[in-house]
Image (cartoon, rainbow, N blue to C red; front, top):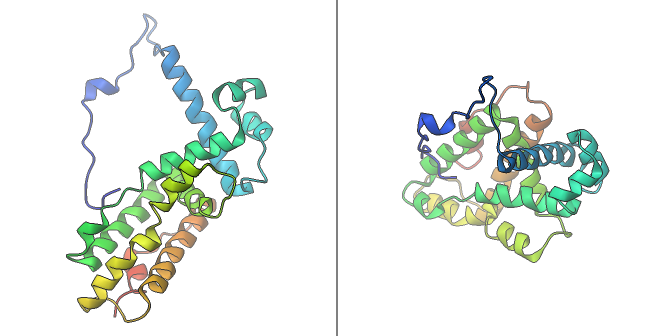
Length: 215
């Protein structure tokens, strides 16, 4: 994710489904496979957020997804593989160029938080992914490869130097920069977790979170 950057929109024609003579969309086997994988992942995400990783079974995932356990294992041989796939997806969307923040840390962090809050407000899936990613840092039953992905995207650690720079520029209050970063990101995590379970509640403003850092 890079705050302030908009994604390029694909050509309109690329988004149109191929239609059969009866006007119904034709879905290839590859597309069916991908759609089923996404269905399983979304279902598993809901259960992992509400019941936790250890409180969720593969049987519950397959039942909630409306498929048999056998078909479930065809896509994901284990619950751990479902979980790690979700983490990998989350990591791919967490890439932030924190080096770009050093010129104006306050502006950068506020833009990033504003983008995150808007994303969470528009897409419940994003709020749940935010919760899952935070919880994943405390998981032990994941592969070394996925652990390495998480360690490389520890936003509290990555934000530390940004906060140090903000302190040097007189933008942020004095104090241990890592402690400030942890307080800041834990507050955002709490908001995302609350909205993942209660999306009807109002969204706070980015400036309220920034006031935790500002002088």
